[in-house]
Length: 204
Image (cartoon, rainbow, N blue to C red; front, side):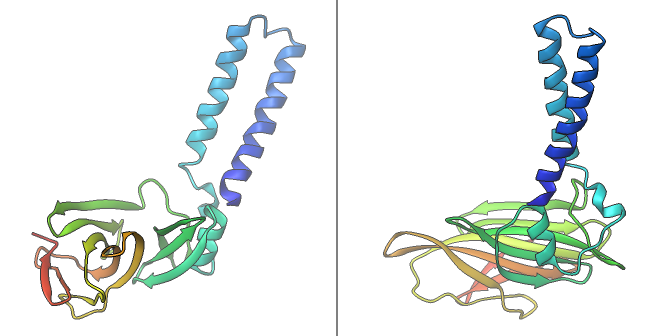
């Protein structure tokens, strides 16, 4: 949460000082210059949100502390990888958010625009599935959404690992929306899920 606040305060102070100085030098003479100036300020501030400069000087003790600093939310679960972790969180009335946190030798880091990439997206009758890879690692995370009428859900993957799942919403008493979260080391096309015994291929 402090991540955005600090950037807004920092750039707000910087551009206010520049604006005041320009006013004293009589460099601001028309409204269009004012609009362009503050438009540029908003653009630069927005770009700074994509660049976690804190990573050069800070490391965090846990994925939870990264989430708290970056955007806030209630941590519902943490899935541990080898060089990263995935935080499953809720915020307000929304649940099932996910936040992948890279790890260095000194601790956990704020994810950047290039630290995590989506390597697969699949949507079919079985559900909606995305696979993410943490750059520079063999850590992969599978995030899925399925619709079911089953009263109980049991999900394991092709590595015989239990897959975390939560009920995201219930729009109808007979229909459930289930969110699935799984860590996979060295994801391959052969990877699949067994949802209540039914095989769902993810890689192919």
